[in-house]
Amino acid sequence: MKGVLLLRWAAIAIAVGLCARAMADDFDPFRTQAQISVSQLKDMVPAKPSEQICQFGALSVQLSLMEAIERALCRDPQTRQAWADVKLQAAQVGIAQAAYLPTLNASSSVSKSQYTETVRDLPTLSYVNHMTTRDTALNLSWTLFDFGLRRATLENARQLLAAANATQDAALQNVFASTAQAYYQVVSTQATLEARVEAEKAARENFLAADARYKAGAGALADKLQAQTHYAQATLDRVRADGDWKSARGALTIAIGVPTDAAIAVDSENHALPDTTFVQSIDILMREAKLQHPSLLAAEAQLRAAQANVAAAQAQGRPTVSMIGNLDRNDQLGQYPNDTFTRNKSIGIQLNVPLLNAADHAYRVSAARAQAESKAAALASVEQQVALDVWKSYQQLETETADVKASNEFFETATQSYKVAQGRYKAGIGTILELISAQSAVANATQQRVQAFSNWRLARLKLVLSLGQLGFWAIQ
Image 1 (cartoon, rainbow, N blue to C red):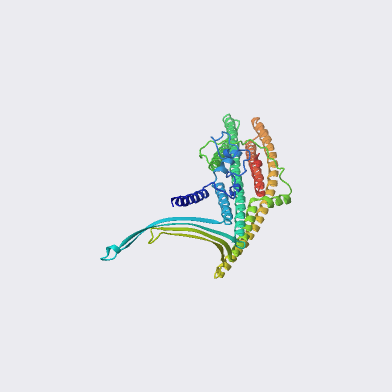
Image 2 (image 1 turned 120 degrees about the vertical axis):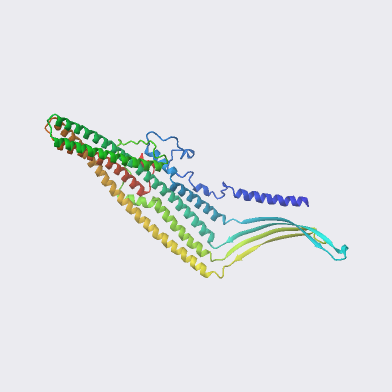
């Protein structure tokens, strides 16, 4: 008897151990974890080992665009949420696959009871009975046929996982683009500030020259006042440029997750234009976007998931066929007049046919079909938006390319004109108005040149983003 009891508890211990293993975090019998990226950055940083991704030291003295973007991608809540959504949908795929497996439940109980019977005035007929009841059972259930319900549920989960992965790609690219825009804004405002500082310095020199000529009796008071006014305006422009630079720098520090007072230096002297060999005809670009844009891939997967949900809703109203089994042992020790031992084994087929749920089933199917129609319309809307973004980005890049060329010519011409005006004024044959006008043209040309380069880089990134191809290759 003790041996049987030990075997029973050993079986229960094994069952508990299997359940504990199934509940472990790393238990993945269907390999759904393989469909989850090893980090929230996916393959955005292919040159780094996975264990080094999102591991940063001190902020670099000269902050590169690549470092800024990587820091932003690692700390932005959108990328973390998108990664978590992928994990959630991968688990849902595992749940859908687990529905194909049988379920086996084990139970065991031990109870003690006392039965007392007392006969008045006849104590010899009175007695107390102590009884121990032990019950051990295994219950098996395995759905064999459900006429497409599990298949449709699994397809729905797989498509939602595909949509989550595509949505993660879109989130990464959006954060990438917004960080690059913040970085280029710092570059632009820093270059503008440097130009305004130089313009203020030149205005001060012109004012001092006009003041000296006035004191020497060689210049008019009006010339001195005009130079002084221009110097005050240049100072005001420099102060405003400094405020814009600090605002842009603060936005970038928040994006990359460092204190807003952190010292950030960027290269504002690089006027080289990145590669544009990826830019082809607009028709080819639109076809590429339609094939690989993550927003489109996500919308297509969501439509397929909704269509699978229609099939699942339809299958819910159909019968199911299951195999059921039971193994039970019940021991009652101390029972009067003798101990009893009961063994029960059963196996069979169970048919479950839904009967009085026609209305509920019809409405569920209608709701699923309406959701599929909504997802189809959403897909059409995304297709239209992607095509519009590609077209607008393509045209904007062409415009900004022409603007860069024109701003370079304007800058060179304005610089030469200022040098001539400065020489004429020093020689005493030019007027202060001519010099101030030339200096203002240089400051304006410098500002437009800086802005043109910044706008061109942003237009190029927006075109890559509209194609759904944005990555670190686009900034190298």
